[in-house]
Image (tube, rainbow, N blue to C red; front, side, top):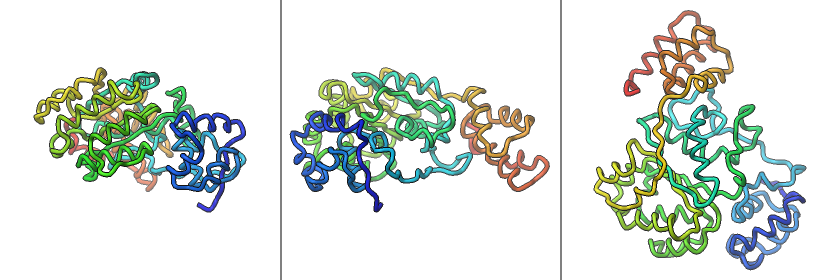
Length: 357
């Protein structure tokens, strides 16, 4: 990026102490793992300017979100929102600013994850009920800069969010459907060395020996992994269970999204692994509360008339996707200067594929 950053003076001592805490006996060891020069590591730990990319990489390996330790007088790259549409209907919501509701579920999920041992949770919901968006929100909300959030949007769910590692696994991604591909991805996400070959035994050795920060693995579309991925057999799932329950000092937790309970899903796909018995908390996604739905509607850049708000609430029954669709149609009509109620007819037409709500 052509710019340099340095550690804030108030963070230098904690950054230095993170070296040993993350398993590096020396500065040279850190430099060797990251394949950067020793002088760069020394400059970073001394609070001297280093290249932006090196700054981000060293911060991550020491368990810090770089924005939380950077010297504030240094120019920070301008944040870019991943979505700019006011209402998002075709893809999961990945930027926390555009996510609304689910406060009860979020409180319970973060309660399970804010202290050791991390506990496991399953999010159950109908197709297009917002499961993936909720997983993305869990992953991103605690480290998103306040200026990128809505005014008053809660983000302080965890006491030390910079220490957490979040790994999002989408089993629809073909690269995650082989055993080696998935294990390699997890190790790379953890900034750990990837053995060759990257088999299950070597993966277990690497994670059990080196996982010393709270880590949450988010499994999305796990039904695909169970139905279509023969390499992810009971032995694989049993190994993951062993990691979470016995070998990582409570630092590993799983949150998965599924249309049915984990045990039922495993049974229906011919799996018997006890991995699917470790999900002590399940939540089934229902419609949003009316208060949450009104907050979403109120986020429109052009305010809606009261009668339109009431109509949208009634027709959507406060389901997030249906709310987003109807709000999108109303906003488009206002932006185009249209009069009349044609937008309502268009909105109802768009709702037809989602009668399961």
